[in-house]
Image 1 (tube, rainbow, N blue to C red):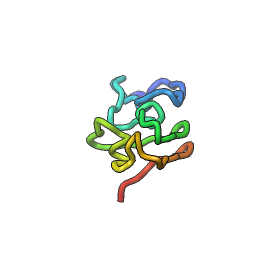
Image 2 (spheres, rainbow, N blue to C red):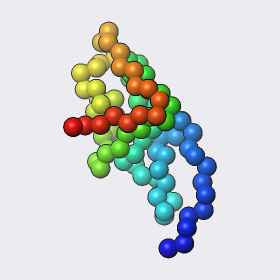
Image 3 (tube, helix red, strand yellow):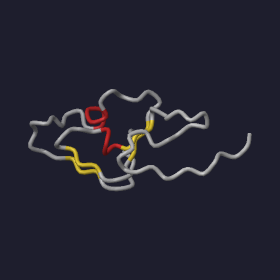
Image 4 (cartoon, rainbow, N blue to C red):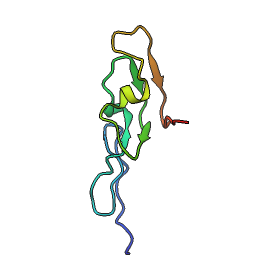
Length: 85
């Protein structure tokens, strides 16, 4: 297989930053900042998550008990990836 041409690094606003060799986006990997719309979750640039079966709602997947009306806030820094143990 010939090497792939160089690509620009994706911006933090890119939802699916991984591009497969056939040119399609890997839907299982997301930058969380554009993927989460919960006002109580603040996500830094280039923080990503990956799943074999991506959830429809990344916010409820990562913090299932953090509702938009909750007083608590979750802050996830830059260049991180949350993990499940």
